[in-house]
Image (cartoon, rainbow, N blue to C red; front, side, top):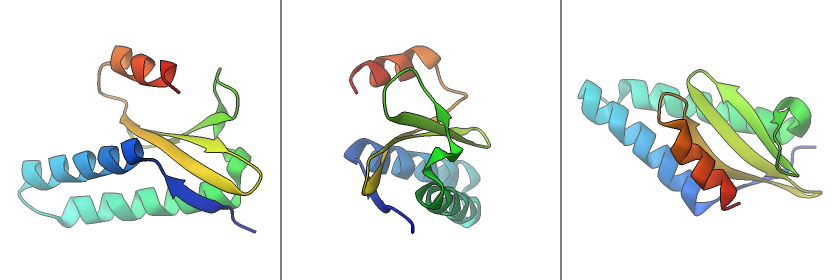
Length: 102
C-alpha cells in the first residue's frame, strides 16, 4: 500500500518556482503541465516503492532522479515527506546548504 505523501513548504515552493520558470521562459503552460505530471507520477511511484531512491548520507533521506531534477524525501513508517526538488543545473553549494539544515 502506498504511503501518504506530505509536501514540505520548501518542496511546494520549489515545485512552484520550477513550473513558473518554465511557463515564463516558454510563454506557455504546456511544458509546465507536462513536467508537473512527470513529477506527480514520480512521487506516486516513490510512495508505492519508497526504497527506489538512492540513500544519501543523511539518515532516512533518499534521492530520486527525474531528468534534471533531484527529489529528496524522508521515509517514515506511515508517510513519505517530500523535502525539496532541486534542479541539478543549479549551484550545488546552495543544495549543500539546504541539506545541512535538515
